[in-house]
Image 1: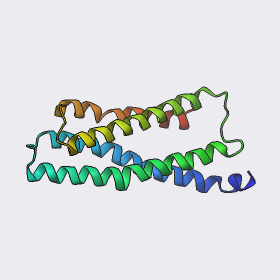
Image 2: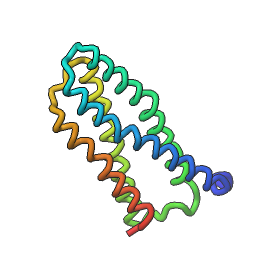
Image 3: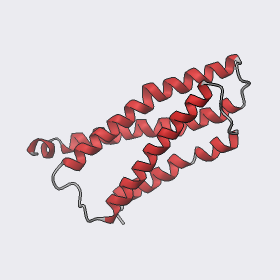
Length: 147
């Protein structure tokens, strides 16, 4: 436990860095889905979007989410970091769980695009594109302001 306390600033820094990478992908992937909807199935452009979506998810978003959760769990285990009675912590944790759930939904949507089985419109993905922003607002306000 002494080690976690000593490494706290580094753990927090890497948690924020990995969270920024995760969020960058979470903002961009739904936008790719918006554009992908406008492509004809089987076209060269559609196939290019499939590659972009797959690489973004597997090479950036998934590893960044794993790192964010790993460093976040280390922070939670660091003595004195979390006041388990504080309401902000539970709101933040709930928003992070919702973000992870949205991540899972995007993985499913990517799979549907890969199989040429997407049935949703570009408008659906335009709306979905706002979800990570709203969740991020909640998370950051809970951590910084701690209302």
